Every structure is written in C-alpha cells, then in structure tokens.
Image (cartoon, rainbow, N blue to C red; front, top):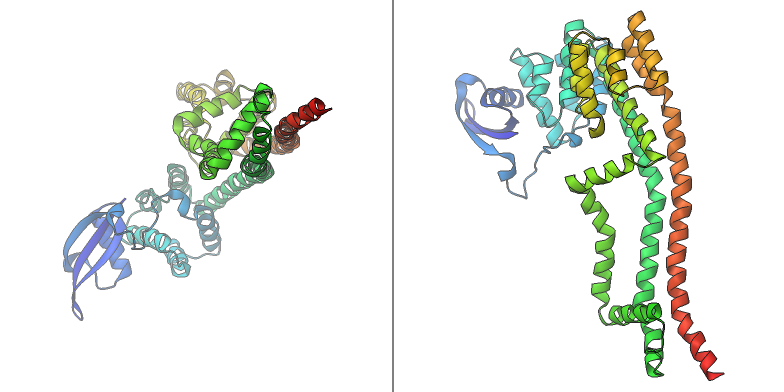
Length: 409
C-alpha cells in the first residue's frame, strides 16, 4: 500500500496539499477529491509517492493489516443500509461519516473515490487489499452479477461471526490453563529465589551438602544460583514463558506443532472436522453469492487449513474436468458420511450452498463438545503436573532435613 502527497491549486487558498493512501496515482486523485471538493485532475500540480512505513513514528499511521479494518461490522452495517433501500454510494458515505478511525476513513475514502470514478464495488474493494481480502472481493464480484449484494454481505458477516465465535471459544478455553502455568512458574521462581537458598545455606553451614542425594544437591545448587543471581533467574523464567509464543509466531515451528496435533489420536480427527466445517461454510457462502464451483473452491483454498489444501487442489481439478462435486470431494477425502449425503442431496435439488451450510452446522455441536472435553482434560492434567513439580521441590528441600535428624538420633 502506497501513500501519496497530492499537491493541488485552490482558488481561495492557493497551493495546497493532501496526504492520501491509495493503490495508484489515479486512485490518489479520486481519494483527494473526496476529502477536498477543490481537488480535480485539472488542478493537481504534482503527486509525490511515499511509502507508508517511511512516515515519522510520531505521526498517525493507518494500519496496513486487514485485521485492523472492522470487516464484519462493515458487512453488517452496509447490508442493513442496502436492505433499507439506500443506494450503495450513499450507504458508503454514511459509514464514512460515522467513523472516527483514521485508517478506516482513509480506506472508505479510497473506495468511495473509486465508485465516483465509475468503478464497480468489487474493483474499488480490490484496490484496498489491506482491508478487503480476496474472499470478500470474490463474494462481492459475484453478487454484483446476481444483484444480491445485500444478501452476500449478510452471509459474509454471518461467516465472520462464526469465525469470531470459534476464536472466542478457543481463547476462553485457554485462559485457565495459561493462568495455571503462569502461577506455577511464579511459585517455582519464588521457591528458588527465597526458600531453597536458605535451606542450602543451613545445610552448607552444617556440612551436609556433600551427603545429599544427587537430585537434592542439584536443587540446592539451583537455589544458590537463584539467590546469587535473582534477575537472571527471573529472566530465564520469563524466557521459558515467552518461548512458546515466539515459536508459534515462527512459521516453521507453528507448522510443525500443527502437524503434530493433526497426528494425535483423539484431537487429529476433530481438527479435520473443524477444517471441513470451515471449508463447507466458505463454499456455501461463495456458492450462495453466485460464484461458480471451481472458482469457489479455488477461493476457499486460502482460508482452509494447510493440510487440506493439497486434497482440495485435487478436487478442484476433478470438478474442472466435469466430475460431480460430491465424487471429487469423496476421492480427495474432504467428506464424511453425513456431509457426503447432504452434498448429494444438494446436487440433486439445486441447493448445494444451503446443504453445505447445514453440513457445517451439523458439526458445530460436536466441536463444542470437543472444546469442553479438552478443557476438562487439560486443566486437571496441568494441575497435576504443577502439583508434582512444586511438591517435588518441597520434598527435595525437606529430605536433607530428615536425613540430618536421623543422623542426630
């Protein structure tokens, strides 16, 4: 995404300039025309190109990540306005007027400028890839041919709501385990910094360190190190907590973890169902908007799990050769007995999109039960592990005391 500085002549103020964000110079002029009425192509003096990340750190910078644009809210609100009979351009201007976010207003200004220059909505949205992904643009492009833009926007908003709800369930299920892990690490650090060093000092004073078992001697050594270097111990603990997060952000490590999860006996099949449900919902949304089956499968490829992308490519090639969708998905392993029957019914009745949606909804309850099962299993296991580790430290601390008491007796 490029930032442009448009220099233009205004009859009242003379030479002026505006900073806009657009995909090319023509779009920059259109966007500037929306922001200031005096900007026309004939009055533009010059246009300077400037990369967005070249702006000073103190300046307000619009986000270049699609996640920052409220796409679900935009779809919902624009669908409501269109269903109420408000023209498309007026609806976008209405959404523009209520916005206070700089990045959102600049994106909407660019889209409005493209529409005013005669471009279609899909072309205007495609010029802002930082906000509107390929899936959304494909839905709008097909709905323009069928005249069902409002319906397509509602379907897309429902799909994003499902994605957000699923993400919320996963986040909620991970809060308690993360709390247990952080609390357990904090207790261990406290023991190593304040409790174990005192025990080590007492045992060293009576000359009992050399007679300790190997595990107790190692614990006392760690305690002495922690007492002498508290900040280093805290840094190591924080590094251990942050290591999984940093590893997850690394593409290769994340791919390895996901591949390992897919191979687990209980979790792997459920992850496969989750990926299929996402594929079915995406396909239902695209087919409902009028996208051809091959194009819909190709577009859905970008949002499904990487493990299913290869089989989906094979199914797409089979459908492009003239095979039925149900048979192509069956051969690629992208169906279950339930979804296969639903897809075949949809092919016979001409309601393939709704049947794909019903197939996805069929697995929602099963995935909900999976989340609850994982929560019920993981939380006790984590508590058991933390109890064993902390209890082991306490036992190893008191074991030398017991030995000394036996020697005295």
